[in-house]
Image 1 (tube, rainbow, N blue to C red):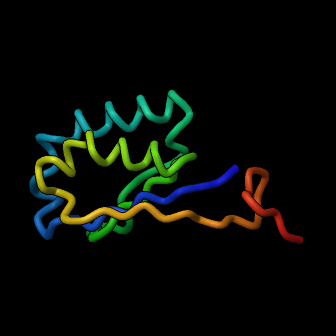
Image 2 (tube, one colour; image 1 turned 45 degrees about the vertical axis):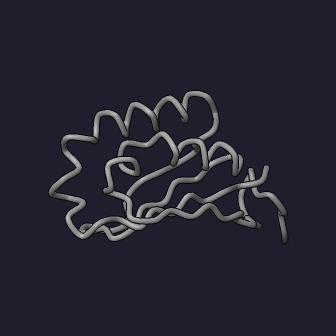
Amino acid sequence: MTHWLLRYELAPDYLDRRAGLRADHLALAWAASDAGDLLLGGAVGDAPTHALLLFTSAAAAEAFAARDAYVTDGLVTAWHVTEWKTVVGATASTPTR
């Protein structure tokens, strides 16, 4: 399985502004998870400047970002999709021992 990371760069006031958008963001995230597109996701650290979401395809990651309220309402200042070449784990894309 190929893995794709969606990396969000968060606005400085992200924690102060997310409450009004969080329900929409989480509904989209859980729908993507239920569809099998989103494997994991969340903000990094206690005072986050970034968030990471792990997807099964680049197209799913890009479609998610295009629809995410955090992106469309400016809580995310930039986003990037990158292939993650995994080598360890049951679902690693290129298992290496």
